[in-house]
Length: 146
Image (cartoon, rainbow, N blue to C red):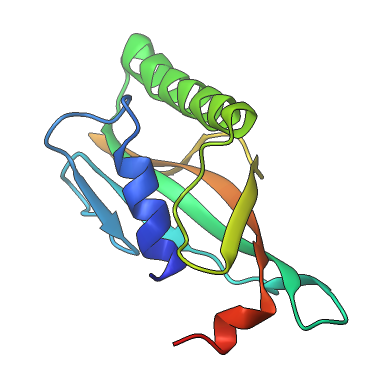
């Protein structure tokens, strides 16, 4: 399974998401309330081991399109959502709940790289986002199995 697919599935299970909102990959509509998981470039290998296994990272952004405007309470709610989302990620870390990456890949941590923030604002909606990093161990057998 592709890592971005596993992350999308994992985030789709977050109880904070609006019911019925679309969760895309590398795509967020300009005027519809929804979510996306976007890949971020990075050096994937963090540490190589002599047996051919390694520790890896996968950087990504979780973003949403939210209602936005001059109402302070609405904008506070948007920022509060990202605080709650970061708390959900942290609780899952402590409980060992991570995306399922398949055979020979074992996730061991998800880091919050940046807090949630308004990235692109318009008159009625804004893109809010938070950057995260999934850390995982990849066994050398990943490239030789089946």
